[in-house]
Structure formats: C-alpha cells, structure tokens
Image (cartoon, rainbow, N blue to C red; front, side):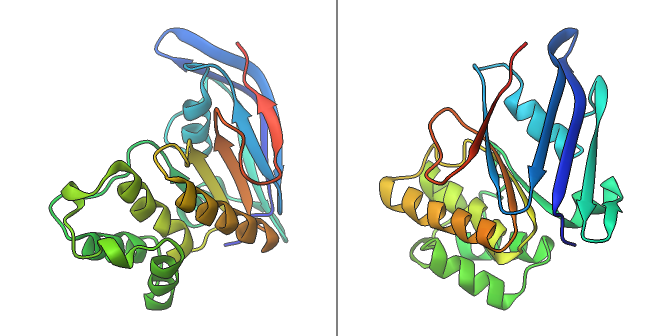
Amino acid sequence: MVISKVRIEDFALSRGDRLLFQGFNLELRAGRATALRGRNGAGKTSLLRAVAGLIRPRAGLVTFEGSDGLIEAEEARAAGLHLMGHQDGLKPGRLAREEFAFQARWCGGDEAGIARATLALDLGRIGELEVRKLSAGQRRRLALGRLIAAPRSLWLLDEPFAPLDADHRARFGALMSEHLAAGGLILAAVHDPLPIEADSVEIEP
C-alpha cells in the first residue's frame, strides 16, 4: 500500500460542543514533511486522529491517493499509515523486546524489519527490561520502532521528539529524512521546529 498524496478539504473538528476549527485545507505529497502548529488545545492531535480515522470530523473530507488514483480510506488507514500519539499502547508487563516484536508483527513487520529498527533506534540495550521499567524516552523509542519495522507511507506524529535525548532526536531525524527520500509523507504536530526541512501549517480557530 503506497500513499503518494493526502488531501484534507474544508475540515472542521469539534471537541464535545466546542468547535476547534473549521475550513481547514491541506495537501500532503510524497517526499514532503509538514509541521502542524497551533496553541495547546487548538486541535492538532484531533486532526491527526481524524486523518487516521479514529474520530469523525464535523465537516470535511480526507482523501488518499496512490499511483493508480484514489485509495479507499479504510484500506489506506489499515495498511498505509502509522499514527504515533502520546499514548504508546505498550503492554507494561512484557519484556521490551517481546513487546516490540509483537507490535511490529501486528503492523505487518518481519524479522528483518525488527532487526533494522532495533539497530536504528538502539533498542537492543533495553530489550531485556520490562516495559514498565523504561524511561519515557526509552518507551518512545520502542514505540517509534514500529515505523521502521513495518514501513508504511504516511507517518502521523504527535510531538515525536518530546521525551527523546539529543542523540536519539538526531537518530530519529535521520530516519525521517530517509523516509521522505523513499517517497514517504509526514504530518507532525509540533511546538519546536523539526530537524528536517518541512512545510509549516498553523491551526487557528
């Protein structure tokens, strides 16, 4: 499943009875990253979740395209994107290597992908620790590993660098660049600048 373009058209989102924003338009293209900015509570996380199909917009449409034209939204979301939010979805009682292998395979990864991600994000050092004993940065690296172990075109990232130290920020920045060079797309909700070239879009009420 290769997504080459995503269109977000005339989008409106609400939280409860409160309108977050409306009339929002954005086009994502292969090989490009977009930094999604806005004050806290503006709706950045909600927009990522709506693109992933986890919440329904008040108005508007998300369409996905591949080399042969439109892709059904359900198919694109099931096999064409990764959403990395604040909640990492990791099971605390498992060893880190066991949980990572389970998560990677669940997303369609194989042994080669697991090995590649383990090396790229330095996961071998934490593999024998229980997930509950990992620091916030270690948990984030374990969660980010799914992006590498089970490649998908569209990365939806919510403050991906927040708990990472400088070394691992640089590592993941390099992986983002590789993803874009291979034709991937990135939409990242951020407060601080991304360490890669990126378009910038502001969400306003």
